[in-house]
Length: 307
Length: 307
Image 1: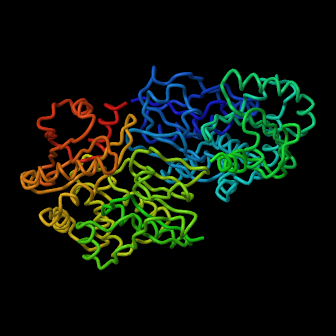
Image 2 (image 1 turned 30 degrees about the vertical axis):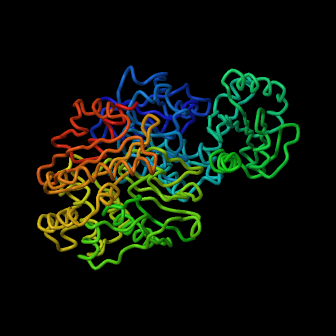
Image 3 (image 1 turned 90 degrees about the horizontal axis):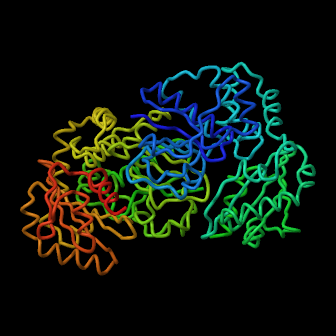
């Protein structure tokens, strides 16, 4: 029985690569799966796929018209998944996020570890099943680890991510530092993007205390370049909130060179943001030095503040 | 930081053994954990612990007064866990059930596989971490597998359960067939139990379509012996429903020798039970030939019927 394998909506490099890697592994073990995506690759991911001459994945909007079972990578929350996730059975999940808004009717295979990148866990499964990682796939998986850990600088980075990243670089025959910086910079080409693209391309929704909180992250090498467009970004966020019913929108603008974030918070619940970070907002904004990880440094304190 | 490791409420043999086994493994890997239980061992589990001269675990009612982090084995649903589960962080889950009514604020280590017994998964972790299973612990883990799979006869049984069960029998120096039957019979000594004990000792709650459905299972070697006490059981179930707000109570009486179940259904939603099994209830009862597994043969069809 054919299964589709996919990462979250607004796919980043790990969401697309982890789907390709896990689908490859499952097929080597005898399954019939296809890696697809819930959206077009972003600039960074296009750079990665082009660099390794890997085709872009097919984009799907629905799963149930094709298959009855799916495999989720790099996410579990239903609102981050395919629109008709409730109409299909989930047979496997490989993830490195919190578990929420997820349930199944039957037992399944679920593997989550608190590591920096989903592709790190998938590499472990290759090893456990004694399946070799081809050089091209190793390059893709290395890219996912560099992307998720910001070249091992994010606090989500674990020893496993570093050790496995280095192994993958060796298999791929790539200098990870040189390639990594080039790749990250390819993802920060913000000038060519509309404000709407900036506030949607890496955005994820979270249910917190009955509110829908949308958290987007934009990586840059220059905060001031992004905030020069603040009025435009505010208008795009207001439109997102009213069009989609988000109660609160948080835009993390993260400087990947010095690992600092400036947060712009628009909507209901700014007091929860202040409570979460123990800092007052000024003109809807707050500087969060050392904060680069949505998952580890933004969502958990917010979750606590809303609880 | 000390952590408590425990299985579900109304612990069965796997819930208690898996906690002991996983706590042992985590401690070997450098953690500081204690295996505890959310209730007293049942007759089968007492037989097992006594047989291998293993102490009964300490029973806790709350976790947050002792620790801030816990490890769950053999369950994930909050209503099956410790009363104050919302006040502690879950760092690890090892389970073989569906995932529902479970969420965390942060990433965690979660490993679920659709195998017959949680201790089967834990044995794999011993192997992966190259930690030896001591003979006594092997006997306990074998007992958990025999209990959950009814000596490899339940449809939940996988090749992994059988292969690992046989390995454990070897390490423990036990003939699994002879020991297994003796152990299962020790768990079916129903004559000494009150009706209230029979309808509570292995009961679990499930949220289905907005209803609280309580499902209990009693193993026997003679159905008629149990149903001779039907009036007494009905009264005990009615009291359970009214005291605890259960909408529907299902008592599975399972003959472990011929693998058949007679189901007694008391409360609102009998029509969903009929829909789930495609059979009419007669006098609130229905015979389900070949049904022995709550998890695989009772909960999923009910879940579908209520959806």
